[in-house]
Image (spheres, each protein chain N blue to C red):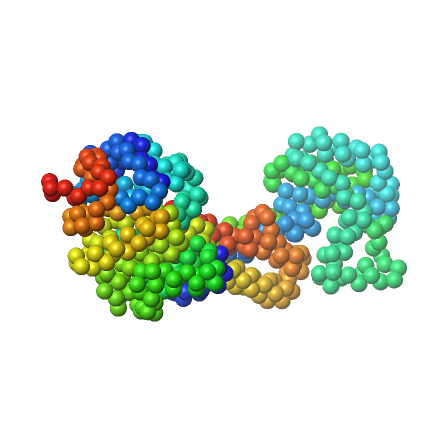
Length: 318
Length: 229
Ligand SMILES: Nc1ncnc2c1ncn2[C@@H]1O[C@H](COP(=O)(O)OP(=O)(O)O)[C@@H](O)[C@H]1O
Ligand SMILES: [Mg+2]
């Protein structure tokens, strides 16, 4: 097969349908940008849940050697560092509670790391980094992440745990978090629904472009078939056109998302809202090439190549 | 080279079949006229050979292969062994004569060196040596049909199929085209030509297969068109 000939055909094809290709690219860029933004929001929710727990979770801190709650007049930690027996008793209570779906243990080091990450964002990391710091992994409380069955039924287990020896503070951020996650869910599905409509429009435009191109080339195609050109050879210019459109669409959408992440997130929201962890460039990479939900690098070509394959089969079948 | 075994072809819709239990056997190197009134099924028979159509029943063999059930991806290879010429020439208007002929080689992946060797040779054969740079619309009908024949023959097919190749041409020009088809036949290429041109068939005596309402009603080794028409 002659590369030169194929490239010539490709150039002619792109020029012949320039306005159609431009409109496909525009639609594609916006739909892929929205799809990508939706993925970023989803990943934002993931990183936030990773650090702050989800809106079904409460954190039950265990007593430390020198627990601050003792100074506040609470009795639970009077015995100092939580003992194995106390811990066993707490786990029994968690297992028995009907409000609890599951729970997992968080070691001192893990809790310290999370707090450190948060402090880094809010500019309080110096508290951890000074010489002879007040907070060290050793003095940080271990705890249990308790996941509830339903978001608004926790009173029973919280009051039961509050009375147990070895339980220090119970952190319950469900209300604030549930609002944040609610907004994220709306943003995520909102952008995906918008993306779906635009992707559908892109699909129709691709189909239309191919129909016009096949019409414009129908004499040539008829002769190619007659003299025995392979289906691949006849269809290749169509596929390459689709690939070029997709590549340009993906590149522009990726650029748009990068700009959004840099100016909108890093230099924008992340500086304003410091208590939330924010998506970073590794999430951006996932947005481009992630497997699920499919990154826009796969989404774009799939959207142009699949209809092209189906339609060229119809228009140029031997 | 071409064999029809009780081939019936029914198009969608009601009505009689376009071909009805047709059995034909054409040997390598033969020159055969397919004659009959308009609508008798000549074009249908030719399209079955190209596998542009499939028979409703019966079998079509081309070059020793039964092509009815041939896989789709093998069809291009079949068609490379068959050259085709039509009444309406079907040249690409935006390509020169030489480019039109070369196109048939390019699209099946022939090298540029081979193309630049074979195309002038073939144009010479059809008597258009000096007209390679012309555009099709600068040529007469007879010359355009010569270009079409050059394109059909440029890959040296085993079979040449011609569907009323003289249908748009005056008698004098038609004679020239027939001589050319005779030359191509003389190289060993099997030629099947559908026509209802009495003068031609009677003048260039060859085997005649006559169709009527989709049935073979006559198959004569050296026939004339016949008096009934
Ligand atoms: N694509 C088609 N769809 C339906 N009927 C067709 C089609 N092509 C041909 N026919 C019918 O089949 C019969 C034979 O046609 P054709 O093979 O073209 O005859 P000829 O070439 O001898 O004039 C005619 O009755 C014609 O109307
Ligand atoms: Mg016909």
